[in-house]
Length: 117
Image: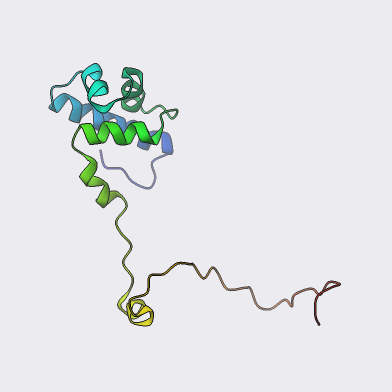
């Protein structure tokens, strides 16, 4: 099943858990054997595969690494690429801050005591 933006968080976790279980079975590993290879408890593997929310992300990463899935994280969160115009403006400098949203114009800022006029 393809994960879409309409999935709830719980639905995504269940789907990811089912996929991990499928990969584990494809490697012919028991939950206990995978837990030992990943350095986590068997209960952590059970929680991941059932989609329980209480599992920590580090346990998920360890299990994925043990199953040989860690290199796929690059597609999950790809490195941000600046547009060609932004690259020209920065001229090799790495961006360090976000500019934020511009202030809404139309209503003047209310003056308070202690501020310059």
